[in-house]
Each structure stands twice: as structure tokens, then as C-alpha cells.
Image (cartoon, rainbow, N blue to C red; front, side, top):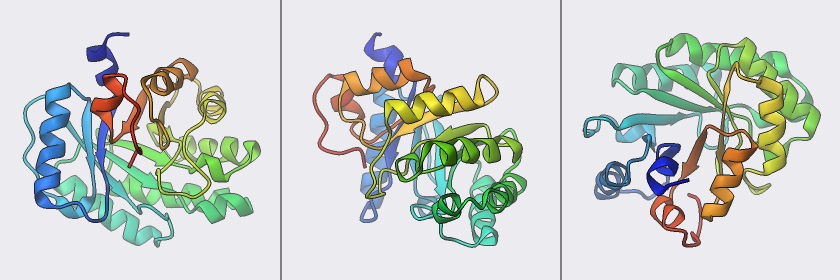
Length: 221
């Protein structure tokens, strides 16, 4: 895969809590320079100016997912008012561990209602913290609730980030009906291409340049 083709799968990501306005502008410029699909930012930085052709994603309920559904919906609604293209929301991971997938579905539905299509909704399930049955059930809840993507990880959870096993299982669960985003712990070009081979159609990367240039990244977020 060429570097240009690989870049088109990337959401170039800046979610560091200490990110400054200058950092945000630099991330946008780098995403555009590298030919990334989008730049993924924290909602508090909105509004931002983007060059033509670069999509904008923001996170909702990030990184814990332990926000009331009304708060997540409000974040999504504000983001939609600012013209974002995509929203990456975090589920309540504890609810998934407990098997409360009806609650997870309702949570996702609230965000979907606040940011309807054509805004793309990605649902972060924190796959490293879940067993296989919970990964499958979380993906099924996301599909029932109208999501467009299921996404492995925030990159902030101590259990870890994306794995080939999780991406493959998520892809098997959603088939071609939803897409899969791999994020968290992707530190080499080999990692990135392996995630795509396993079924991911989007990659969340902060060290995009290093990965595209086949240099090991220090961290994902």
C-alpha cells in the first residue's frame, strides 16, 4: 500500500488534555499535508477552520463514557451545529461489562438523534476491556441504534487499545452493514496495515507521520 493510500484511512487525532490552540492548528495542517481522511479533535476546540477536502470528527463522552446520555447528546448537538462530519462517542464500558446492552443502545440512540445522518456516528466500545461476548453484543447494540461505525478504543483505557482479534471479531459481527475503526496502540506501519487487513476501514492515529513513514511512534494519543 502506498503512503498516500494509507493516509486516506486515517483520522489524524489530537485529544491530549493539554492541547493548545496552536497544537490544534498544527494537527489540522499536518492532517491536510499528509492527506489524512479527517482530523479528530476534542469538542471544546470548536469551531475550527479546515482546508478543503479534510473532514472533521469530534469525540463525545470522551474518554470515560461515564456521562449521562443527555450530556452526550448535548455535546453531539453542539458539534452538529458547528458542522462536524463525524462523531466518535464512548459507550458506558461498565454497562457493557455488566451486560446492560439495552442501556448502551439507548445511550447511542440519544447521540444519534442529536446528530442525525449524514453525520457519521462511530461508537467506541473499548474492546480491550471486554470479553468476546460483550464485544459482539456491544457491536449489535450499536447497529440497532443506527451507528455507522464501531470503534475499538479511546487510546486512554489501561486495558489497552486495538487488537487484530478485536477488529476481526467486530468485522465478523457487523459485516458490511457497519464499518470498523481501529484506534489505540497502533504504533507502526505494520500495525496499521494489519488492522486494515483484519477488516478495519478507518484508523485513529496521532503519530500519523511516523507511521506512514514507517518509523515507530511513541504513542497513539
